[in-house]
Amino acid sequence: MSRTIAILGGTGPEGSGLAYRLVRAGETVILGSRDAVRAQEAAQRISAKAGLNVPIRGAENSQAAAEADIAILTVPFPGHAALLKQLKPYWKPGTILIDTTVPLAVSIGGAATQTLGVWAGSAAEQAAQLVPAGVPVAAAFQNLGASKLMSDDPVDCDVVVCSNDDRARQVACELAEKIPGVRALNGGKLENARIVEQVTALLITLNMRYKATGAGVRFTGLPIPKPRT
Amino acid sequence: MSRTIAILGGTGPEGSGLAYRLVRAGETVILGSRDAVRAQEAAQRISAKAGLNVPIRGAENSQAAAEADIAILTVPFPGHAALLKQLKPYWKPGTILIDTTVPLAVSIGGAATQTLGVWAGSAAEQAAQLVPAGVPVAAAFQNLGASKLMSDDPVDCDVVVCSNDDRARQVACELAEKIPGVRALNGGKLENARIVEQVTALLITLNMRYKATGAGVRFTGLPIPKPRT
Image 1 (cartoon, chains in turn red, purple):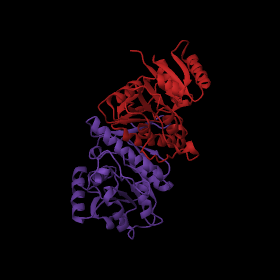
Image 2: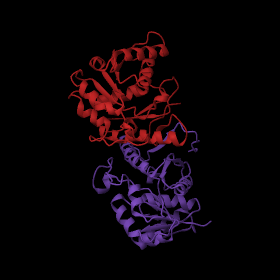
Image 3: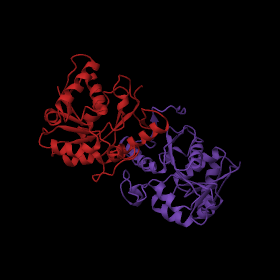
Image 4: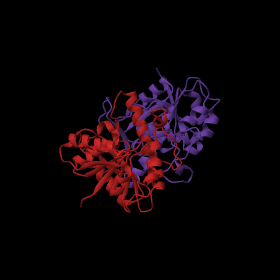
């Protein structure tokens, strides 16, 4: 079954990296941006890197959202609520929204290792409050550093998927495992995204303390095999 | 150099498990409890399990704290602030306090997978507010499940140590790595304990979702080897 994945705010490093991995895995991607021309240019760069004729194009965010069967939100936190409010009239019923956003304090000029308090509890729960009924939300991909995505190397990281909707959880897990090395884990309810989002700030601390760029996380002691990396 | 480690609230599973691992590693431990008799009984059980004549004994918490060079706090969160207030007159200057506490909502009748908001930011930061000047605090061990401690098996888990005091951080790292399999990581400032504490709630979710008992966490992408497990 053909499906279209919109990556909203997709011209940034995280969105472009996810787009790259997904087109490499054979998915059809629309890169969304405030600026359709920038989106098209970024899509062309990803297409060139991934090989000619991969199914990716660029569009303004609301057009990308309107065409999406699955939308992945990769905007910096300060633009999160505003974009979701803008998109509200455009969603097709049943579109699945996967939120990757982390409310990092650095996004509003604070410290790289700190997060902002979000009234809803997490960026993902804020997203769930700002989409129409019938658009289920999953939180995923927050702990995958952008630096590891724009290559073909396996990623030594788990993706914890939190959702109150079984189909959204399943789709997010399936997409995550299209990235070599990634293991998707069922992180329970959407509210648990509060913790997964925070882990990203801890990964930034570890990167800084150990002069690394690609800290990730694996969970141990679970009866499911870890992929090879 | 001989040193004494007090494990306060040490008759519970986490405290007893840490005590077991530390006496196995040759450390001298005083198990602290509200009730000196219970503390002595628990110390005897650990001594019997670890082999005769291991250096562990029991005492009332304030006596244990008074004798400690290092104190490890393993009380359930509802007793955290009260115990620290009680202990305030007893600390020797320079005693290092290592806080393992996680403010789990289940400790006051809430959900197993949720945490309580702590005004100070985290249990560890609350501890730092409740000790005298000259007693540095490190946060550590929160993600090591008790079920994995009361054995000699290697533990497949990192211990993230957060502290504003270099000596406290160093001592906590050193003690953590006395547990086979554990890798200690520098998690930066004490305030980052906010995140490490939350991770415990996520591990509980993963245990529940995957019918496991010993979920742990490893960080990847760092230039330091992981121990064998």
